[in-house]
Amino acid sequence: MDKVKYVRIPLEIGAYAETHNILDLTQELVRGLVIEQPEDPLEWLIRELKKPGRLPRVLVLGPPAVGKHSVASRLAVKLRAVHVTTDRLMDDYKEISVQARAYLKKDQEIPAELLCALVQQRLREPDCFNRGWILDGVLQSRLQALALQRAGILPEHVVHLCAPEDVLQERNRGRMLDPDTGNVYHQTFIWPDDRTVADRLVKGQVLSEETLSARLQRYRCEIPGFSSAYKHSMKVFNSDQPLEDVYQQVLAFVQTRDCQRTPRVLLLGPPGAGKSLQAQRLCHKYNLVNICCSELQRVVAADRCELGLQIKPYLDMGRPIPDHLVLQVLEKRLNREDCSRGWVLHDFPEEISQAQALKKTFHHPNRVFFLDLSEEESVHRVSLRATDPVTGISYHSMNNPAPNAEVQSRLKTSPAHHREAVLQQLQHFNSHRARLSTVYPDAIHINAQQDPQSVFEILEKKLTTN
Image (cartoon, rainbow, N blue to C red; front, side, top):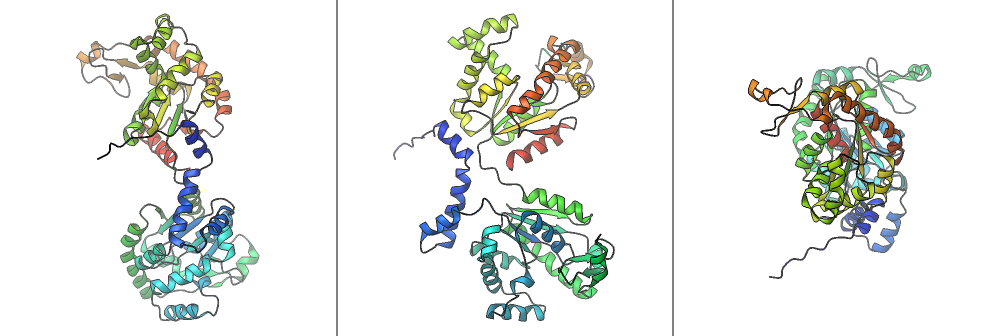
């Protein structure tokens, strides 16, 4: 058997592909071609490429009275997408619409293939093609979901609203309808601010408690099927809270995009912000390369290579290493094969000139995080650190004290962790923070005063979505 030879893609090609979202674009086009199988693939590709950017494809699921229509209608306005409901799928007199309405009149589920034909027919209209769509409460079963998937109707975001049964019963009883717009309100939960709208509201369709309970039971039986069909794109939201809160949570979700890029993460922040800890956690979970610039410099100096011999005198004398040498050390490490799977960099850059120099390379980060920490907390975290010279384990006299008196007696504090040294480091970081932000205007700020796990969860969420 022939030996497999791995070919590394040149950095400049990868940078171009990432900048212009080539991977996402290719994936979308190939998937569309395979699913739709157009007679003229070239014409289909041209039409797809003329679409105005990435359009919303959202499916809203949930039991009766959970608030699907209220959330979906607001999403449609915000995203300028087409709001597609079951009623609007059948607002013509075509044969398939007549057939579907007959099932609804009998309170029966629309057969999967018939529903799929209705949805396909609607989504092929020019408004859905040009603006995207929000499918609101259209699906009632896993079979219907699978039929849509087979037809190539694949929502990018699936919103699943849920609430306790007693809340749904109460919402059902107080349902109100605006006859002019079709918007749904409630006597207690959702009341319009506009007096004119409030005056024209009429009693909405109210299900009997028995009918609602039966539908809720039927829907609960379908939840595992929906979760399986949309396990990679569905998120569950608690609808038992104010509509505005639910809407904002759902909006934040549907505005995210899956991240298809190789992670190149830069962590910035004052001393004690937790950059090293978070870098370790990210690298452990996502198999990235952990690059601490100060540690890397010491490793290279100890290696006694040509570059190491140049930087060793600066380290021995405690003087700053010139930027051009630091960049050579960094580029040499980032060019190694393991870094092709992604990396997390910290302890560099510290100044705007360093950030600008790094940006000119093909190794510039695509995710930048500022871990924000107050000056008081920074001094507290760093100045109380000490290290056990026997085991190399670091301790903190308040947050992580030594396990016994023997270990406590041999702890040593680094000169860099003395209060005066920490204050000096803080002053240096604060004097360059604003200018570093100009190089990384899209950087994400995270409150590092929180516990480390909370900070990690935020980092993880921002790392895996756009």
